Length: 127
Image (tube, rainbow, N blue to C red; front, side):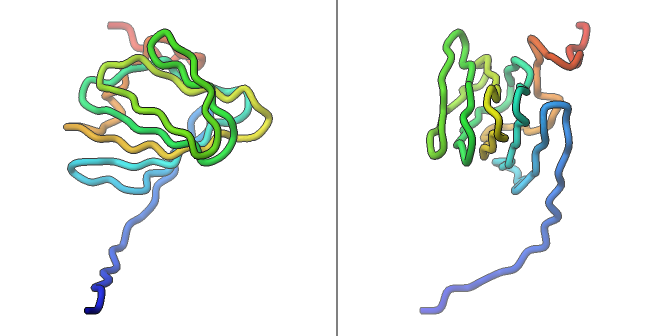
């Protein structure tokens, strides 16, 4: 039996943020996958999502993850699951970039599903 190989053209998009960057690796109806890089001394906003859950696996560096009121240190090969509505953040206190893969599962994956509770870069919108 021969395996069927299908080539799809997919343009990877990298978006740069004050804390680092993310590259979209897959964007489907039922999931989205990103490669996220957090620069040394930087962190993402403290946030939560209404429409998606996330799974993060660390590729390199050491990440300090806030999950609700808990702080967890994750190293290469370690992972964490973030439920819908759970408050979370990733921070890089090291001298090398933190790189991780984020798998999103849910009903909607737009960037406007980020509710920022704290942000070092002034991106909290007044409600």
